[in-house]
Image (cartoon, rainbow, N blue to C red; front, side):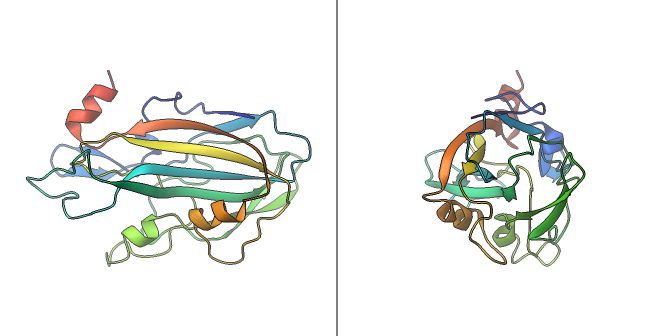
Length: 221
């Protein structure tokens, strides 16, 4: 399989319009357009019954003590963990691409609804996709203005004082089952576990992002 994007180039920065937040000189960050990037794939193997798309950041800090704190930095040496930004399952094999902004356009305080996501495929028939909650659900749990269940795509928003560039990996999986064996609310990690033993092939593309002005300026050169 292969996967590509018209929104960004492999290994290059995720565009600001596809991020949850952008740099603001006065306040460090402000909310952005939060549009899901365009993604397309090909060479799906014979026997594929459904596809799953995951987007995760493997550079999320495991300790939030210094995150977004004035006069401090999040050291590059700090242990990191996965942060899931998008889990889309039960994608029909006939669907070959996702348009930019089709699944997310602007930040939704409290999160977008889910998990069911009716979707019209090219032949005009409706297919029932499902989206898992992303990890902003936990991140905003104690924020009265933002708390809620965040289904679907929400883009990059790494700490503005992080010394590390964050890498966002979009992976498409071809499965030998038509419906992922999960019910109700589910996470990206749960989807990954549910796919075990059913993956026929996979492909990935990655982009990078930073809200640290010193680092972001080097990425755009």
